[in-house]
Length: 142
Length: 235
Image (cartoon, rainbow over all chains, first blue to last red; front, side, top):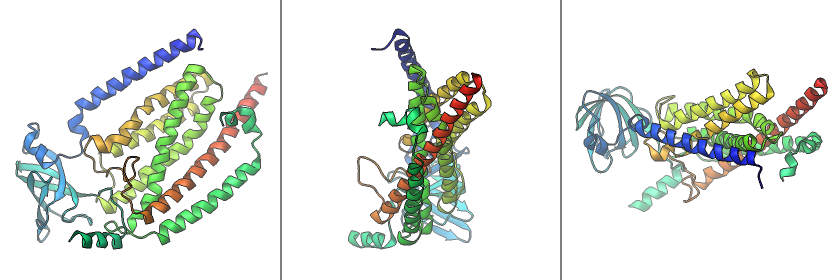
């Protein structure tokens, strides 16, 4: 059906595509620790590359009833429902920073349980709904 | 369907079709904008900044879609050397570039009130920025290289290389932890967007699709006319 030249080109292109995709795969694999934007508390505990006094980002949910404000200093607990890390932060928090919502904190680990944040970002989830629906959902929960 | 894109058909494209598309675009986008600004409700956490999504999501979608099309056309172009294929990808590129830049800018405007930052170097945002650079490279090759054959080859290779970036954009939120949230609309499960917000999103997506087709048809026609003029000059 195809001429020899076209066949050669198809073969060559398939080879090239396989080669490039494997190369990208390897590059991305080796950069894994840099590609992830933040570590979960469990990863902080299990990953030996994460050391104290090194700038990292950790993320997870803000634990319920854990936010304590003292002036501009905020203390709260980041959890991934398995492990927990206490975070200390001084400064303004983003508007969407709230309990049981996602959060990403950038800063330094004091030890594996205590984190001093320099900045805090709120992480939004993929759910979009009007306030009335959210209220109705809340009611049906209890 | 395929025959529609053949050069003669496009050159005799009735101007009525373009006029109809323009009026359709105006009607659909007015409905879409009214729906997304006035009728749809604010979000339960984000409030009114959710309305940015109605522009952000479709433009990201078509930004990726345009490049996917360009990449596939470029593969076919390199193998079969069909004359009008590079013209199609050449005329899609600027629209896709605009869409991807709209996606980045609106995302940034949304990120400030929601995340608390304009920009974060997470995998989704970075790969989207790389896509934008691929568009720029593709367009610049056509602009800067005068030799048609050479420009065709280099731009095709750029489009094919950029193709590898697309699955990274799509799955970055699944493979790695990112600041960007995962997709709300997937093929496999029910959308996690309430239908009152899904409707304006779909209307805006249709409006942008019409815009994409419209600009593509106009540019494609111009490219064909340019080729014809050049041929006459050479003779």
